Amino acid sequence: MKYKITKVYETYYDAYVEADSLEEALKVSEYANTEWEEDHDYKPCVKGYWAIVDKEGEAEDAGELTPEQLQ
Image (cartoon, rainbow, N blue to C red; front, side, top):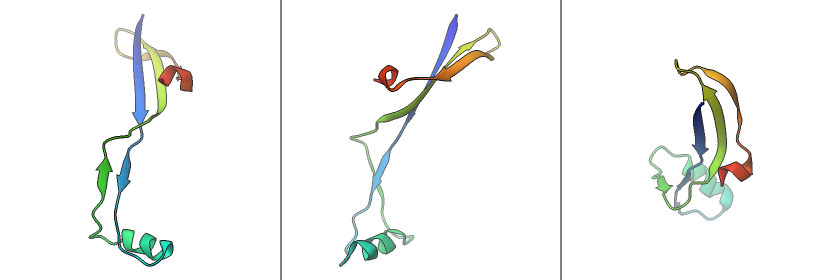
């Protein structure tokens, strides 16, 4: 059997803004000129799928991976 495994990773983006309150910081973070940086240190795998595929690459059977299988 041929299996196809798909894993979906979540990524984080951080922005540092000067503000006097959380509400103001949230507003400032929405500005178009706010610089967001991707956090490359932490990308947890949040979802996974499996499928048994035939010779044409079509899925014969499929399902979701459990959190234990994603480890």
